[in-house]
Each structure stands twice: as C-alpha cells, then as structure tokens.
Image (cartoon, rainbow, N blue to C red; front, side, top):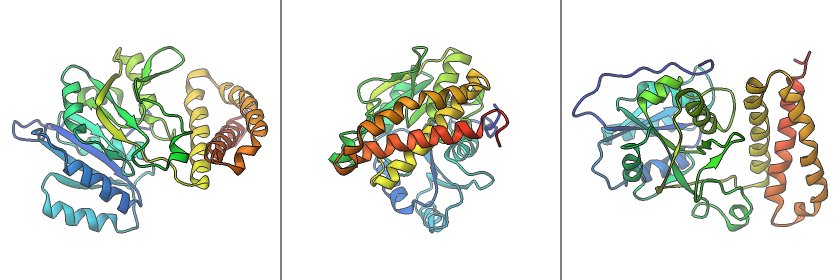
Length: 300
C-alpha cells in the first residue's frame, strides 16, 4: 500500500511475546511516562512486549526510555526518523515487533485496568478489535461534555454501513501484513481507514471489545482544539479524494459551507464553555478548505 512502511513477519517463538504493544511518540515524555506506567500495571498472564517508537523526539524521550529498557526487558526502544507522523511510526513499530498479535496505543492516552486481557480475549475469535473509549477520566468536564464521544457503547459506521475503529486497536499480524499497515499522510483517522480497507479488501469487519477500556486525552485548550480540527478537516479531504476521484476535494470544500453557516450562527459559543467545540469545528472548516484548495485542478 502506497505510503506505508512494509512490514514482515518475524520468526515465531514458543517463549516469545504473545502480543507486541506499539506506542508511537514524539516530544511527549511526561505523557508517555503516564501511558507506559499504565501498561506495566496491567494484571495479565499474557506475555507482552512494549515497542516504543520514537519519531524524532528532542525532549529527552530517548534517554528516558533507554534507561527503562535496562530495568524492564519487556520494553524496547525503536527510532523512526525517516518520516514524520504516527502512522509511519506505527508501521516501523509493527515491523520491529516480535509477536503474532499487535496492540496499539498512543502516548498521550491511558489504557484502562484489564485492557490488555480484554483485548487478547477478543483477538482469540476476531482479526481486528477496537477498544471502548472513555472521555471522562483524563479531561475537564467542559471539554469532555461537548466532544464527539465516539465508540463509547458501539463502533461507528462509515457511509457504506461498515463498522470502523477509532483510536487504539488490536489486530492479527497476518491481517496487518496483508493490508500493508497504515497509510501515512492522512494526518488523523488512520484506524478508520485501516478498518475500512480491511472490510473492503479482506471482508474483515472490526469488532467492538467493550471490556478493553481506553482513556482518551482530548485537546485541553482552545488553540489545541483548533489545531486538532484543522488536522481533522485536512484528513477528511485527503481520505476522500483517492476514493472519489479528482473532484472529491472540491465537492468537500463546497459542502463545508454548511459548517461555515453553523459557525456563524453559533458565534456566542466563543464566550462560553462551548468555545472548545466551536474552535474544533472552525479548525475543521479551515483544514478542509485549505486541503481542498491545494488539491484543486491546477493547484500546487
């Protein structure tokens, strides 16, 4: 798959790890420490390894993880600096992984108690599983209240009715290999895209694992919400264009006029607790228009 780092299946071992937990990271050492602590506290008899993939951090992440590797042989440090982006880092981590099963988590989130055990149980019968998202533990109420709370009770579905994953997943290595890993360059929604391709190309549907609780860290400031929205808007256009042809980007740009009207009609939100939601929606419009303009016929 274009834009993905090729992954290969390492030799299996009866005493090796049963699952490789891949965590990409970039300049979030303090948050990474929190996530790794939660992973190490998992109460499970499952043999696991943790592959921390550093995408070029400059905040001392490498030294801190290397020191941790000396203390815990289950943890490995992998440098991935040829490209930037979480999808690329995950592909590098999957390539380095030694287990037949893969589990993915992000550096700024926190896996729940019993997360790994529940994920492994689900993977016994399914090729691709998704966690239950929790938005309350790590976030202030004024942000969590208005955020799109996907995957709390069930998986979302795309326009064709296929179930899609959002955030952390568990997947069989063979499935990952067949799909060529995640697509780089779409900024956000890599798991959504992966689950769509799994359904289209392999007839493999994502399965919801409600016992595998995963605590999401949401953007905490107006500026962070705006940046998150911009990435989301750009990614929506990037994802749509290959499927719908060269005119998809422009049609997405025009469809965002409804969002622009929504923003104008809700300007009072800027002065209240809903400013975070308004900022993210504003960012989505900016991002979609920017990416659409860049992809217009004759554009740069």
